[in-house]
Length: 476
Image 1: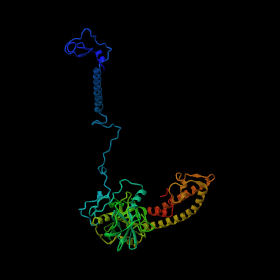
Image 2: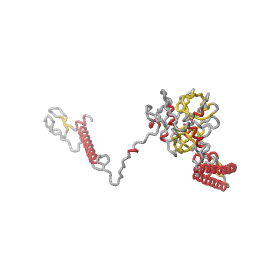
Image 3: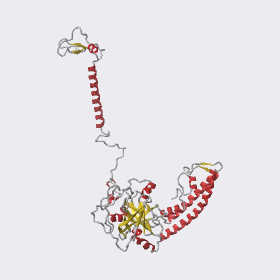
Image 4: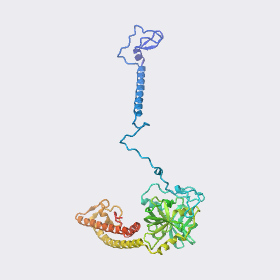
């Protein structure tokens, strides 16, 4: 504000020289306004100072009012945030959380394993096996292992990761599988490398290296190999514990035998966990193919719960894996010998094959035979239809087949897979193809149900359908 504006709203005290607002009749020194100075009119604006002071006072009043209203609202019963809050009659009360579900039990191998100083049991040693990243330095006496993923991933991604850790093992003419639990450590079966003068390990990328046996337990058919040329970036697998294995749980048997069956994967369920004279084994219907011995049996989280050992040829869908607990005990130098009449886990097969099958086993064997024979006939019919389909596709269909099907003509009932253009005049032929697919679907479903009632294991049924290329979507 300039001097002229200030002079127009004030008068000068003749006694002390102060400028006094024209609305004030006397100066602070007591001098009255001279007669020549007119008082301020009611229309004159307030000075800059008075305007600022008025604004500040107003702001303070607003803040105080807001604080009072807030205190009133939050102090009143029934408002959220008040310590005396009581839910209304209509609002459901939250039930207290039971103590047994407040903290989920640990599921990884480190959570359940006791300390290394714990006294081992004679039947099953309680392993203490530290999980260490493979890029870290390996402490003396330990073998690193990657923890399993916390969340389930698609099966394809899971198997792809596991296969990178599975290796082929060859010893004096015998072939089998193994898997890395550390960049320089492989687990396999004793019967794969027993008595071998030279052992060769073949990695997933095709490179090979020699290996030597550093520890083994013939009783549980588990051996530990040290490779001569470890790779720091080698994928490794985590070892789980049989305490978390349940009947009906989905499992995968993975192997990498040296030869045409490299990267073999079969799927099944856990039939039972058995304790045979101090040897803990997992019974499964996942097929153990030739050369898969020594490979991992993994759960849906990618943990190794067993080491595949054998299948019983006289019993369809009957395979066994040694519990990973035995491997953990052997790795930490605390393996316990088997007791009782079973000298080795490999004696399970001959013991079972020598017994007369029970009524349920006989029914399962008959059901498996009938299921395979019936589907073989259906597969021959499908082979003939493959040739007819080639002519229909060439003459009538313009486009591609989306997705993956055992036989292309299975796609005609899936609008997403069969989305191309059908030539004019070919509609009746397309309708006939759809009827054929539905007929095959009904036949498969009928045979599936009959086999299920006969006790044929799901893994056996899946294996037969896959071999005969009859994996029709919607039939399980």
